[in-house]
Length: 244
Image 1 (cartoon, helix red, strand yellow):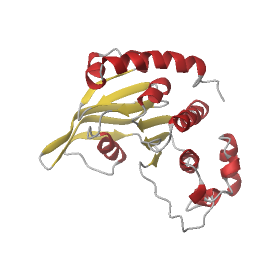
Image 2 (cartoon, helix red, strand yellow):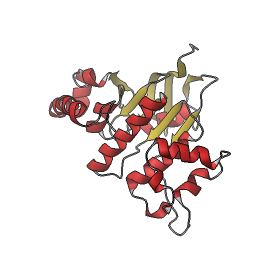
Image 3 (cartoon, one colour):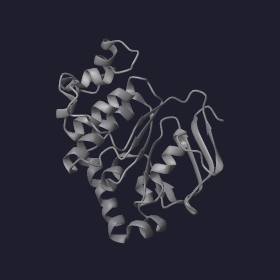
């Protein structure tokens, strides 16, 4: 594998109950990539992540990984036992062989040090997602994998979260692979979009993907036009490399 490639998937197919969940998927993740996988329910997005992470072996195809690959994964569903008294800081340190000072440095870097003494059970959805990512960064990964990280957040929470994610991406220069339904937010932040509907319908830069016939076929003309306008507006007013 080339030095800048973290994961390379070739002709990945998954069949379950005689149904083809994934069909001939080819995907390469490089250093400093920011890739978002979009698609309707049942498109195979989470299954693709499971294959790439090694949780599920595909029926066909091959997945090659860099020897230097270090992944941190944030799952789609994270349930908190509200009866368990544990602070955000204690949760981050749980089963981590790292000094408290190092964790405090990460929290300070991410501007979320005000959350450390809060009980995990009282955190808002957006605050919890930030703590989950902070815990992931303790291991110094070069690939951060997120499965529907903002599914329970309102629009304001989504915007705040993606600004937070952008900060991590630019300042830490790590790769991010994310599955999301937040098309309006994703188009404005990610560097590459992959549209999945059991196979890869189309892929490319956000500014171009909305004009792809396959994208339009998947999401409709009106939505594609809206995304083009939204990307232009949000890049100038909300989510940018230099924003806080």
